Structures are given as structure tokens and as C-alpha cells.
Length: 141
Length: 116
Image 1: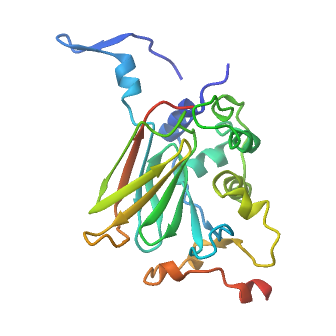
Image 2: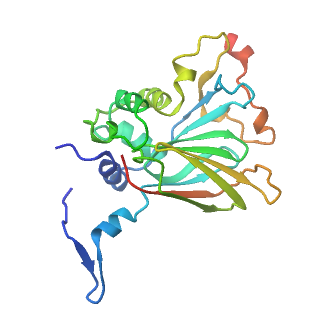
Image 3: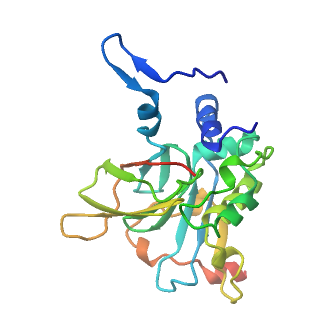
């Protein structure tokens, strides 16, 4: 019988060293054109679980659960876990799980609204944080 | 992993039902550094953090709550805060005493409630 996802996460946290990802995901939500670019930061314990394998459920269970209203039974906590991912696959999984589909699936415009970048490219000076946008010129180069 | 199945835990004088212990535990928590290069310092049951702008963060949960968390509490170097929650994400706004969104280097949050 498959253990509940939360139980697997607890067990993994007690056993695995956290892994700080070398990537961040920059994205702009087309439904909020005035909002600054957002930055997705992978959780170190989650990344350790993704690299270890046999802990996280298949991504399609999350995608199906998006359509299930809160309060209704969800599929992902009870699904059979998947095997180990490499870091790049884990980032792709995380994009589909934690970034709205209108960014990574449905957008058809010309503007680049999603970019995976090394963490060093994220400015540590946040003085103008609310003016951050994805550099379109660099994308075209 | 081995399981200890008991109904109550006792210190010899007082006892508590294990249901209270299990249901009363935080099902997701996160300690994040919200200044400089944003990072998750430590956590349980979170998959990622979204930095949406100054003082505006979102904690994404790995194992969703059955509905929104029954309770979400927040602490750290925070004057005022507000949270908007669903079963799978917790949006946090941090403000100073003037109501202006601000970054802070230490934000800790914990969610309680039933899991999906």
C-alpha cells in the first residue's frame, strides 16, 4: 500500500540533506500585466526529494487536481511516487506544479514570459524590486 | 519505517489522545529569508517559494490541504502581515507600521489543518 505523500515527505526530511538549487525561474503572469516579474525559488527539501526519487507523485496528478475544488478528494497524496529526477527535470516539474498554466502552457504572445536562470543572475539588490521585468532584448540575442 | 500505534500518550499523570497530537501538528511550515537573494532557509511540506515583489511572497505546498489551512500563523521580523490561502498555496504580504509593503530577512509561517 502506498504511503501518504506527507508521510513520505516527513521521512525524507529526516533522512536527506537539503539541496539548494542552482536555478531560479523568472516569470511574468500575462493576466497581471502591471505586476513585476516573479521569481520561483525551489525548496531545498523538495529538491532533495525530487533528486532522491520514490517520494513525489507524478506531475499529472497535480495538474488534474488543479481542476478539483478545495474540499474535494485530491489524487496527488495517494499516487504512486515516481523515480529520481535530475535537477533540470525537477525544475520543469516545479514550473508545471507551481506556476499558473497561463504562463507555461497557454500563453501565445510574442513576449518571453518565462526563463530559467542561474541563481547568480537574480539581483540581490531589491531596491527596485517592483520594477523587475524579464529582459526582452537579451532573450532575442 | 516502523509504526507505533497507540490511542493515548501519557507521562504517568496526564494523558492526551494521539489524535490531538497528530491533528494539532503543523502540516506545513517555512522559514524564509525575504531580503537580498530570497531563499528558503528551512521548511516542511513546501515545494517552492514565489517572490512576487517587495514584501509579497507565496509559499507553495507539496501535499495540499484538504481546503485552505484551518489556521496559518506568521512570525519573524514582521510588523504586520496578511495571508490569503488556498489548499495548495499561501500568499503573504508583509507591511511596515505605515502599511507599506517591505522585505524582511526573517519570515516564519506555519499552516494547520487537514491534509488532502
